[in-house]
Length: 494
Image 1 (cartoon, helix red, strand yellow):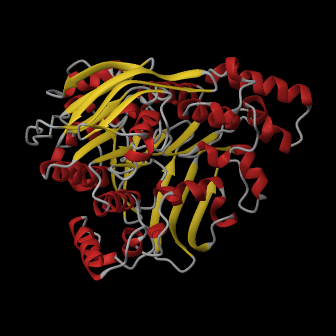
Image 2: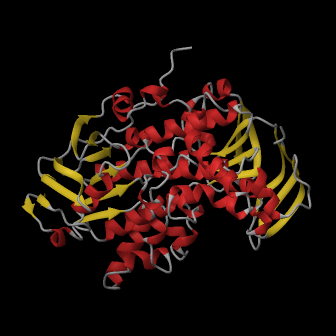
Image 3: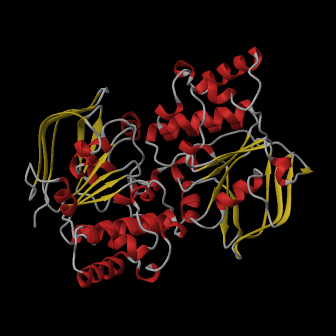
């Protein structure tokens, strides 16, 4: 079986931009699982686009050097690349075309004109192997992030490619979905497929990957086996901008002051149903002023719905919400509770960072001075005139926090603030949350990211079956990880 990939002396720069890859030499042997990691902007996604043909077909630029994919002629048409290379993107919604799961899995096969009976066989086989047979008639948009990622993998698998390219596939997944993704990748490896993965979250790949490559400024600066990677000192990982390879090596970093006595928010008996299906079924919780609290639980348990209800963006069917000790209607909560969504690209509207902070309020000299002061606090003042769309994921999160600060919200709710962030960016966002908590701000962090939670939260509330199932102080990494469902990843001491 083929599947080897070779890049020799390869340099690439997007039109009008700086070089993303610089004289890169990289070989992925057939049947290997290779993980490429490194800080955001180091060139990881550019490598995936070269392998799957999106460069230069959709992303134009200047390329020098050689790219060879075993079994694909250098002058082969783009559609031939699609037969041999399967793609799984960070957000699978960006690659969906059909409404139902079965149609999405069949889409590629239909485009290549496969016979009907062959398509049916391929769809059924891919669905069975990936664990989707029970949802073939479901609408893709109703599925959880984890299930959508499975659909993307099954859609690629139905084509029978020898090479799989996955760009940060775990970024939006909860703990169980990440376990399942690991099992799928392990299965592809057992079949002899070649898998190239770019990732920031590394822990779930430690027993699967053959090699880990560290990319910095478009060049490979380190190559490690799993054992070598596990042996890297924490300071070395920090310098490389990476996340930990073993979550159980993490420690509790949060050492914020004790919260105040007053209530920041209290929810009593919150109930919410969508199309008759209960999402929240009697949620009771209290968060005190100055607390930094994590809201945890699997995808689909109602965490984001609860956050939107507390912020007044969604109206509860029943129940009471108190802000600062006073009962507030949904409309009365808007502005007092600030909700920062996961998808910030559809949430930032300004022409510049400064304009983003000034939008929605008077443009007085005093408010402008306050906006510049906040940008300085966020370490964004040097790029105050830059367009928000050009920012990295971590910079967008800090800018979104700045919008909350200028509106002087009593409670800030952040929904998956470190999704898709590298280790350095994750720590910077966590440091900012810690700083705000120390200043008396109340922060609710909705997250699957245990590293982030351990870094910036002192307490966790876990939702299950529409209710609060657990409410505990985070006094050890093991306690948090076990209650988040990471037990399957625990390793015996070497």
